[in-house]
Length: 323
Image (cartoon, rainbow, N blue to C red; front, side, top):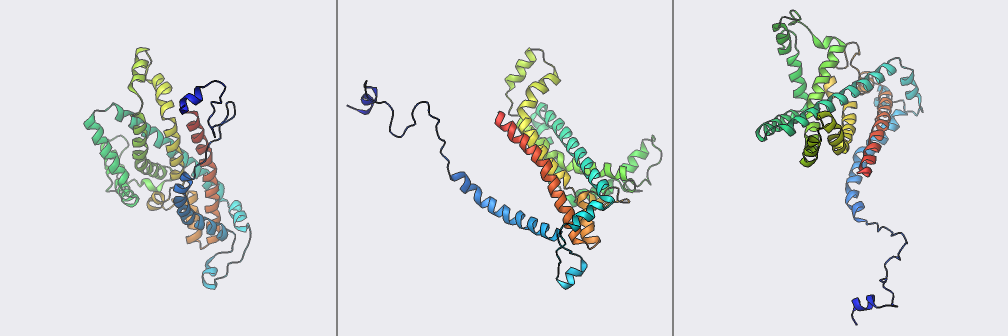
């Protein structure tokens, strides 16, 4: 009698040895392979990021100034650096300015990136290839050359933007206008630069997600008479929601830590009008020779960023579980 006949015979148990009985929950086997694959990356990340972060926290609790560089002694002062930055009159203005600036950058990057991605879906093959190459070129440009190009565009007397604005004869002669001398216009110029370098990644990532939506969904919506906005809300957004949340998380991290563009264009000026928390930490540490306070500001920045990204990461994980 073979095995199949044995299982099919009445009066004999058909449950295989080692198999769970009917009605009992099956225990999921935990494989060590994923943890083994992630371990090298986690170890390197812990060394590269973890040690500087721990060292930063230690410095933030020390009287680490110019004298400490010569004497080598760094007395422990507890939370004095944190209380001093809390009592600083600049703290609230810098914090509000940083949050507002990051929020406008994230909103602008996502809106323009999504618009470019939607346009790329509707373009022909050649125009889509040209658009992709243009986006990659803008994305590949390093921060320093991009800031230098922006300085040349908005430079008084020789700037292309000043020449164009003056040529339309609407706003008068603007050839001598220094856009970086006013906080609002300086922020607008920095915003344009950051968004210009951030949109390519968002647009290409969202386009990759949009190209995976089956065309049958849009054909069915068209037969039902759904317009653009209803199709966008009912079909497009649910499909690309995880990708939208992912690029939102990355944009929050990048835009909250924008430093190079601001420092290269305005160095936090004029009169501190473009000083964000990153610029403030740098100037406190290296311009004022107060490394402990600079470290304390950096720690506060890390805590705020972790809180904001934690919210979006939680939503990202939740959206992935709902799929």
